[in-house]
Image (cartoon, rainbow, N blue to C red):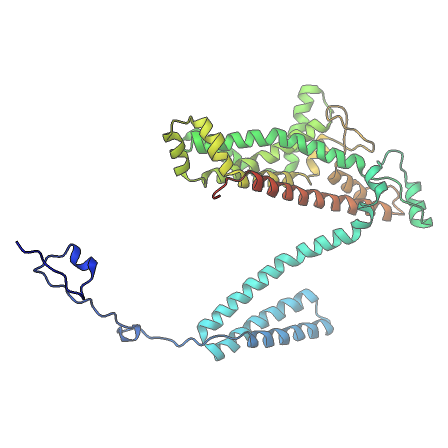
Length: 396
């Protein structure tokens, strides 16, 4: 029996499993799009940024002209933006065709939406920093309380140039204490609930009911949480009882839905292959969750907790109801009213110590707002460091 031989021009892959008596058919020639009936090709010429820049310059000039003529600046910018989109479409349609023109219009819409979203944020940050930086970083403001401060000191400060008396030291400590207690209450509850929904009971009536209640709690007004804490403390400790612990409970009610939802989504994106590999080695499920699932999702979990804390750290209404307002320092969350930066800023804005000389009180309010922003930024940095430190090592 003779063995078939391969010709020098034959490929190795073609002769390995082919029958010697069969002949290979030639591959069909691929047709060009222009050869297919019914297909019409449109020439798309490359676009240049020069027409857009020229159009943008003319649009900006027209907006300035409308403002000079007395039109409202916001309306002038809106009219100029619409004119810019129309001009961009007309210019690019003539230069590069309708497809490029439509693409440039969409780019203009996306860029305009970005500017609309960024401008208020930058304006807010600039306002808070410019009005609050001088007072927020004053050592006296950071180390003093409002105990014993009256409107006479504010009058002397604004009228005679005397140093400002009174600060937010008690409000800073109160914010950290109340928010910390709320985090200690809400983070374990929210995380364990998310673990139950993802790892133990992903489907079923109980899981559906829990998710429904979490969604309902996400949308409740913050004042409702404050009233709940106030009513609960009235039942447990007597009517009219206000302290930092009640405020922490109110904030925990607001934090739990955010922690549950964020943690649930982060746990769901952990690949099932990791769980199956651990369980296949005989590792118990609880240890798989602790050693495999949670370390893999720690980055998202830290971000979710930070988002929940940032969500409640500036709350005012529930704390006004459940905690009250204190002018002096109180670090005991179980004894009497406390103060937070949000409540402190609210009182300085709405109830200045001297109604005729409001500037010192407004300066304190802006400084408290800036300190809140700084605390939120620091929380985000801490969350990033935690995520980076505990993230799973993917390669050596």
